[in-house]
Image (cartoon, rainbow, N blue to C red; front, side, top):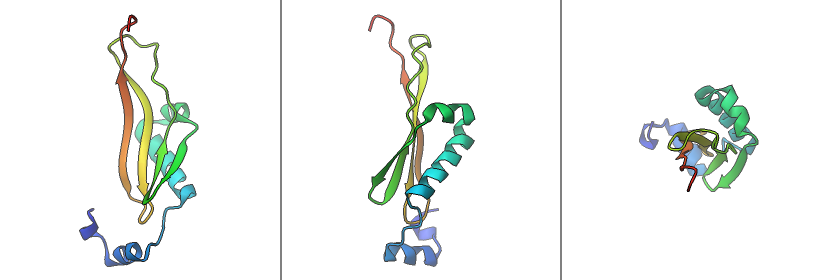
Length: 106
């Protein structure tokens, strides 16, 4: 849904500066979405989550470090990140960072 697709009531809340997603709600939403998308096991590795105020959105990031026990050249899953808009609770982005593990000599 783009802003032009939003119901007029939501546009009015946006113009008024209404904040629907506070820090606590954004964290609860992020935890639920992370569990649903990435699974409970990955979620537990992500903790503790970090919540940052990024002006019009909350940026919630995980703390997972890539598993260095994997073979060189493998893709290792890293921290998750989600941005939740304060004005309407919409998810602006959702990613899980990853790195390609270097060989042992690098």
